[in-house]
Image (cartoon, rainbow, N blue to C red):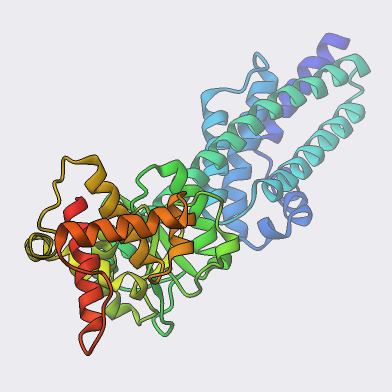
Length: 376
């Protein structure tokens, strides 16, 4: 008698897999527990529920393992919900509600037929195993699709950033706003891991866009980070003043030139483009720099270590506003050593660093430029 009831129960399950009423009540159960799933068209829920229901009951009445059809249906459900913006938690809420309704319906039918409790318990246990396998496939597909979408979205945004910085025509979309002026920030950072750590600092709160452009980290940001927001040891970042998006390409090119010019000077952290104007301009004319060096520093020998000390001290002296004590502190010598080296430099070159008269500013700039050129 038990075998007859078990056979009847399995046959009933096969029939119920095609029962429109069971399908509709399972759909309603899933949608009632997950508002995000309920927001989708009902036919969209029906399509997936029908495939999962038939696959689960096929497995239950077969060897207890979900077949490829059921697993494919679970994977498609997870992938589709990811594309529809339904989080995996909301997806699982709906799935588990449908699962509970299905188990309850099968238990009720089994009790009505007088199916032994042991068979019902085995059936519920098998349903748990089947649905667990389906959940694993569904969650995996959801996560894979989310990663693919994130990568695709990011690639599209980085491509937009690249086109803007290169001055190419492009339709501007979120997170950028054509009505907002943006700072162009460039760096020499090519390591994706380092770039990834800095991007949230440069474009926090979604106020910009960053990525690797021309192999280096670049960004457009509506608000520059404070120096205190940058991690310790942040490499040199050159920031242009804010402009509208059609104008960022010119500043991108200029900021990259400033970056290349400033890197040999050991600069780091966030530096305004305007602050690097002199070093950028002088770096673009190396021949003129060598000409100045030959004019002002005649008598110094590049292979003489003491002469290099004289040039380095003179450069530090200019960088510290012509003040002896700060210069001494910067190069870790006594102030009298600074004075001695400046005096020896004047004796060897026949020229004084002291600039006076109407050409004092240009004279100081020429010395600074000549010293840099000579030391290079």
